[in-house]
Image 1 (tube, one colour):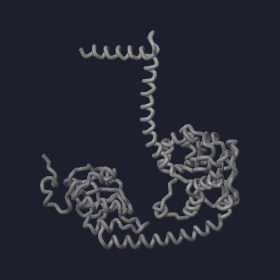
Image 2: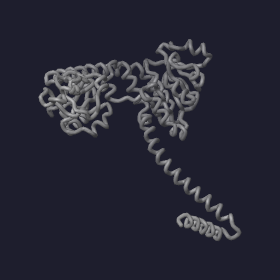
Image 3: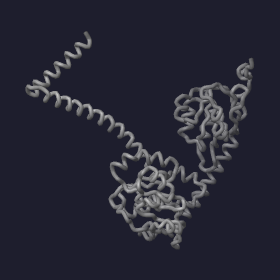
Image 4: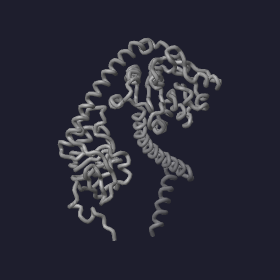
Length: 396
């Protein structure tokens, strides 16, 4: 019978031994962590809160599928972990999770993770010198990007001020937006699931629907008719284009619009939207804001400070920032609205169940009260007595 080297003399082998935790499902792994564990996670540019959770759990080592510091932001999480004497291994790759078994004993040595004598993952050990170099490089890179962004933002705002301030070039509305709620669907990650979860919101408020690029196809697939489609028609199927109330083509400042030939071939009317921005989502937001939509729900196009920091190409950031500033406090993330409606939906379900019980009781009393020859009260008493006698007969 073969016995692994690890099972024979684990105490004599070099490295750190402990229970391996599969952090691919991070919330579950964090709840189960305990002192001395070896945790495998995928957390590029690991944050301070996550680092603190690992420190509080007193884990022995952390293996990261990505880099603890990617060079985009100077994050302090890795420094906290090293100061807590936690061994760090990075760049293990997504395949690090392929052979993991949560809760099994493992050994970490020189950046390699073993189950017995079988290696299941490998990465680069993080040391003080490497961490300092990565931190300094990230800080320098961030400053360079922010300086470039600052210059690009000023130049973009100066050139596009007629659009953002006076609405010059924004197409006229064919379906009035003023005072209406609007849902802008972009083809970002998770947009289809979010749109499906918004069905109760859409049913209740009947918002105008704007499909952006592939988001128009998603609207059409889910049996919605877009009021507007904004984007390159080359990336949108013909049925969705024909179903739209109005098609708007992003165009260069000189008026040239990509995809105009396809629109003409399909025999569909369209308007152009000349702007410097390459983002149809940004144009959709500006369009809704200019025409005084009461509320703009954005699906599939979330924007955050982290996403700006990690954006390798900063050229699209000025447009994203200004478009969202244009919408202002009317802009709401679709995922938040969907989550709110899911919570309310559960409450409505309970309310409907209670209402159904009361309706059923009312029907029973109405039938019972009118089914005899006496008064309603006498008939109800007779029915109740009959039910009571029936139950007594069951238990004799």
